[in-house]
Image (cartoon, rainbow, N blue to C red; front, side, top):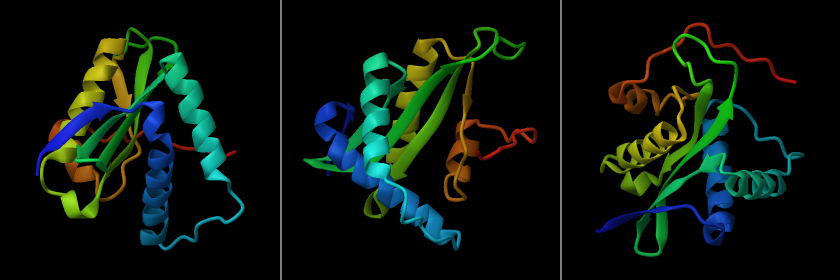
Amino acid sequence: MNIEYKRLTENELSTIIEMRINQLTEEYTSEGRSVPEDVDLRTALMDFYTRNMAAGTYVSWLAFDGDKIVGTSGMSFAEKPPYFSCPSGRVGILSSMYTDPNYRRMGIAINLLDRVVNEAREYGCGTIYITASDMGVKLYTAYGFKHNGNFMQYNL
């Protein structure tokens, strides 16, 4: 097996969208939640990826085994007023970390994570945020991410 890493292009968007929906479905059902049937994620994801890739505010690295995508990662960039621990005000929002179950425990996730963290560093981000799944917490903790007890969420 020879894993190759490539940056996401528009050529892979349809595949990535299906993988993202599968990932979200897996996370929802493992938490005992029902997947909403009235949400059109395909259209929303295509719009998100197309706009943000063109604007340079989203990057993704993919892991390939031949022609098959076996791992994904994503980093969105945002800006907020600067603060002491992030004087640039630029933040990265990590998302879409997923490895095909048949390829887990092979170093693919850490390799993808390293690539998008480097993208955030090059963009000038001072902080990276993530909402981690239970499965991902070990990976992020080992990488150096710390829990932020102040993080809260309000759904509109």
